[in-house]
Length: 123
Image (tube, rainbow, N blue to C red; front, side, top):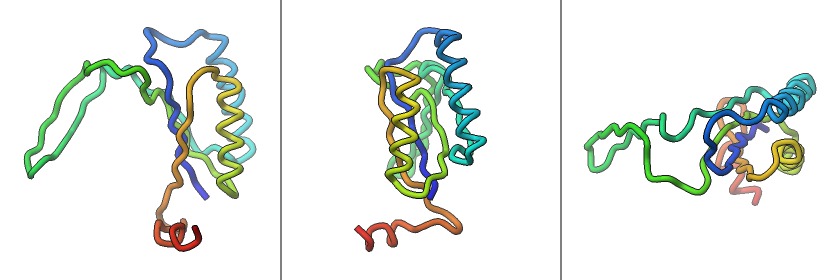
């Protein structure tokens, strides 16, 4: 099963401390070697983002900065886990290294993966 882990935290000014980035890099390397992480990355600040929307057939594109939020999605990882419980364990391990924040886990669906209907039927 694949999961997307979205890491939410307070919007920061500048890069995280080198010690934190090094610790996260070590954890990521371990997870890649274990086959539990497919890919990951941090995200640029919200001020550098762009919203693309469609409403009633009208497309709009708006560049940041946007109204400040207390928490933003600051990074993501694609995880490979045998169960939701295993994905939760991986998220807990990440937060133990990263510190304050939260992770949102969402199962990914696609070719060869469970479908939304399969998950709903088993719930």
